[in-house]
Structures are given as structure tokens and as C-alpha cells.
Length: 164
Length: 277
Image (tube, rainbow over all chains, first blue to last red; front, side, top):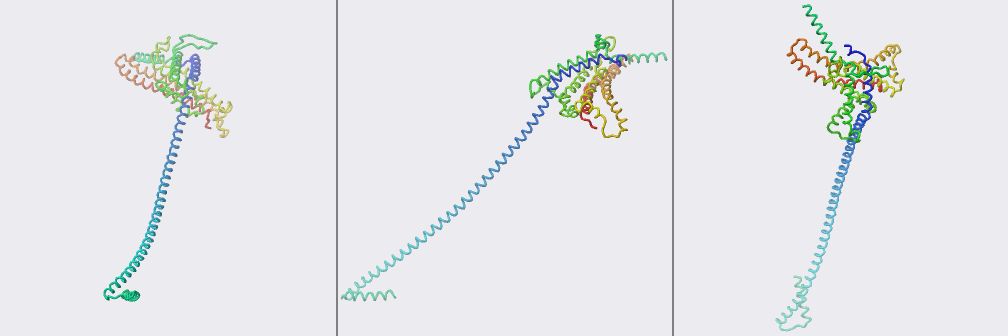
């Protein structure tokens, strides 16, 4: 009992001295470097996480920009195609209008030509009919009227022929 | 009948003495006096030295890569050691002192925790029963000796004053101990209480650690005692089984008591740095 409760200055002294040695040696060589390393690592991890977050944010921004660009490009393409269609349609209409106008004028020309040819042919036929009639009449009558008489006769006949 | 009873009482007393003898420090192993002070080497001094030597060796080895590299990647033992250091740092230092003071007071707090835990565990190893003169022939624990724990508590006591003075100035520290906005008559009660509290805290630290580290040994010896009281070897089966359990419990107590001493010391230092009044 005596030994348990007595005041032991020696043990107190050695406790202080030993603790001081532990504190000085390990404080400088172990505890401080370890605490600093742990703090640095925490800082490093925090920074890394923040950087990762910032990088992800940046990537998302870039991706959004790309999406926007693609959407814009698609829109532009659509516009170009639409404008092209409209232009093509207009050109087509122009060509058709042109062609039909040209065709119309050609037809008219041809009609004019045809009616001209027809008149010419009719006139020729008329002349030939006169001559033939004279020839036939000469043959029939056996006597030739003078040329003027003949012509007058035939013309009269023809006029009547044309009227009838 | 009466004579038998008296003999039994005497026998019980001698068992009590034996138990106390087991947990007590040895007498002087090597006498040493410096300037009138008795600093003789006893068993607990040797156990203290062994603990310190063991701790310094292990901690220096475990922390070698922290001295070499800025951002070390610990593996194996260093990693396990770092886990404990970080446990003290994030569980005790930062919550009580704040991250700014963790580096200032870290070495003291970590030295407290690791030295106490090493001494506690060393007391669990029964080989030190061979280190004695006429007294202290048991495998006692150095931290079960209140002379050692009072020395540690005095370090806490001084650290509280140093921490408060460093943060608020020497006079500021003492002013922080009493709240400013109380009526004067209350101060008459409050000041003595605070002064008392200043000494009660380290006293409680001293007694808690010493008593807890001795209690396990006393319990184990008391459980062994019936073998000798009843002169029956079969009682030993029960005693040994119970003491195996107590040994496992003591492993927890060793860690918990080191943690409690360290935590309370840090809380007191933290109160001096950040006064709540």
C-alpha cells in the first residue's frame, strides 16, 4: 500500500524528461511531417476534385457549344435547300413560260405559212383550171375565140364558179 | 470457530496486500540523486523508457517517407500508423482546436496519445513482474502509477496556460476564465469555482488514467485470488476463463483511456484558445 500511494518525485522527473524527449524527437521527425503531409494531401485532393469539377463543367460547355453549332448548321442547310428549291421552281416556271411562248409564236408562224401556201396553191389551181377550160372549150367548139374573149368568158365563169 | 474466522480475515488481508503489491511500483532498482532530488530508477521508470524507446523507433520508421516526400503514398505499416495519426488529427485536434492550431498542438497531443497507449499496452505484458526488488513483484502498468499520470496532467495544466497566453496574452488568458457580463456578487462565487476547476481538471485526468489502468490488474488478481483462498486448483478454470475476457476488455480500456486523456487535454487547451464565455 505504501508503495502505491507514496510521492515519487523520481518517476515524475523521468516522466517529464521522457515526454520532452518524445515530444521533441517525434514532434520534429514524425508528428509535424505527418500532419503537414496529411494537410497537403487533403488540399491536393480538394484541389483535384475542384479541377475535375471545373474540367467537367468546361467539357459540358464545349459539348453544348458543339450541339448549338450543329443545330445552327442543320438549320442553315435547311434554309439553303429551301432557297434552292424556290429558285429551281422559279427557273422551271420561267423555262416553261418561255417554251410555251416560243411554241405559240412558232405555231402562229406555221399557220400563217400554211394559209399563205394554201392561197398560193388555190391561185395556181385557178390558173390551171382556166387554161384547162379554155383548152377543153377550144376542143369542143373547134374554134378558137380570140384570146381576150376566151379569157373574159373563163373569168366570168370562174367568178360564177367562185360564187356558187 | 472464532479463531478460524480471525485467521480467514488475516488471510484475506494478506491477499489484499498481495494485490496492492502486484500493481505497485517496485522499490529503488538503481539509486540516483541529483541536487537533493531523488530520481532513482524504479520499475515504472524502466517501463516508461521502454515505451518511449519503442514509440520513437516505431514512429520514426513509420514516418520516414513523410520526411522524404511532399505527398507520400503510404503503404502497409506506414498506412496503418497514418490512420491512427489522422484519427487523432481529425477526431481530436481539428474539432477542438480548429485546423489553424492543429499543427501547433499536434505534436503534444499526438505524443500524449501514443506514449500513453504504448505504456498502457506494455502494462498488459506480464514480463515486468520479474523487474523488482522487494516490492512491486507484479506486472503492473506505468500509467497505473499516479506519480506518472500527475506528471502528464501537469504538462496539460501548463499547456492550457501557454495556449491561452499565446492566443490572448498572459493577462487575457486569466480574464477569459471569468465571464465579463455577470453581476459582481456572482463573480465572488464564480472566481473561486474557476480557480478550483483549473486544478480539478488535471487532478481528474491524473486519477482517471491511474485508477483505470490499475483497476484491470486489481480485477484480474481478485479473480485469481479464490484459487489461493479456497486452495482448489479447479477454481482456476473459471478464473482463467474470466481473466482472458478481462484481458480483451483491457485492450479496449488501454485505447479508450489514452483517448480520453488526450481528448480531455485537447478540449481544455481548446477552451483556453477559444473561450466560450
